[in-house]
Amino acid sequence: MSVPWSSKGTKATPVDADQLLIIDSEDITPSTTNKLITIGTLPSGDVLGPTGATDEAIARFDGTTGKLIQGGIITIDDNANANLIRSLQFVSHTAAPPSTVEYIAVVNNDFEINVTNGNNFKLEVDETVEYQYDATQADFNNNNLLMGTAYTQYTSIASPGVTGFATIGRLFLDSGNSNVLSIIRNGSVINLESSGEAFTWTADHSMATFKLTADASNDVILNAPTGQGVSIEVAGIAEYLFDTTQADFNNNNLIGVDGFSLVGNITMVLTQEILWPDNTRRITMTSGGLIIEVPSGSSHSLEVNSVVEYEFSSTIADFNGNNIQDVSNILDSNGNELLTFTTTASAVNELTIKNAATTAAIELQATGGDANIDVKFVPKGTGTFFGVRETWAWPLTDETTLPVVGVTYTTEPAPYDMTIEDAIAGLTTAGTGATLFTIDVLKENSVNADAFTTIFTIKPTIDASEFTSTTAATAMTLNVTTWEKGRRLQLKIDTLDTNTLGRGAKIELICHATAR
Image (cartoon, rainbow, N blue to C red):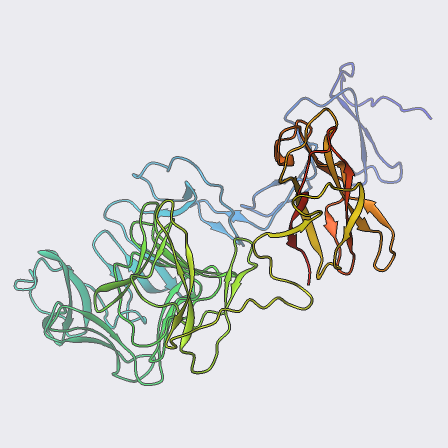
């Protein structure tokens, strides 16, 4: 296909950004269906838009190329009035615009509406001013909060500084005493600091019993009729609710309490706490129970008639001579039973534990109303009470007869299981020579086996001219330390001294019971 060069007029040689217009041969009138061929690139800043637009409408980019625009529904007229705006989105700034101009902005995450000095900020509904604010007053124009058509700023209660009082109630602070809350009612200024006057709401409830009152003691009273409550809300959510039966704090903390008196109950849920002004003392409800917390170095005290009866610190619980009553268990640091207590009906006797000074013995005493009291230790099941050590001693010969090597005595069966701690051999007359007097003890291999095995690795010996194995150069060593119930022992003279002078041989076993 060839594109003829127009013969109309004198045309320059095409360069970048020039365009060729291609027109349908059947329709030589340019229209939106004509096509443009751009030679080179368009200069930056040039855009293409629709063939028509709405007067005063704000143009918007079409796509992301920056070359196309499109129309919109928002318009700005010649007087700078914007129309058809559905919403505005703000981004917080760190500095506000100059206070000498009106503006709406979010500054440091605070939403600000600024009007210059002398101007008013108004909120209208159907072009009727419902709320109006300026530097001196907030006018609610007969809306719910106050029942008045206008506010007047008063310089003092005694001399309001205006002529003619409005007859509809208004609430204001006396500039001479900023702590005094007052209202104007029926042409008279009423000081709510005292005298029992009340500010009454009737518009919503048609009841004069909803009121704010200051009594003669300078206490401010919020009154609601029977069956109603008083609610304090934040952002439309009731945070605190008071009625005739309870004060509901809705999971909020009670902070800055110097003290309070109770008539009914305080009910707390998990994670709620009562916090004192110094922020170091608190009462907290947790899943593990109620926690009373005080700072380091302080203690908890429980008083009766202003007398400290119980005091708790980080190191001690002081009961000040009071009894601990109805205790089932004392637990260790892991929560396991350390001591368990059971009761006997009409008990008159008890166990007393007495401590002792240095070198003295502590005492477990049977005390109570009876003159004579037994003490019984009762093991559980087949268990036994482990008391002091037991010594089992047997003579192997008389005091003068020459001993004979071999088994000289077989013991009775063990009455219960025991642990053998030590063995001691002795003589009445000492032996002499290099060969030492030696004694052996053998334990029955099983009950009724009538076969025996030594309990020693090194048997007890008595050195020359000595009377006991406790001073032997080579100490005795036990190989077996158990003596089971029903088994017997055999006592044996293993070796005589060189000169056979040893007489009066004996053996002792030191044991303690391990089972019944």
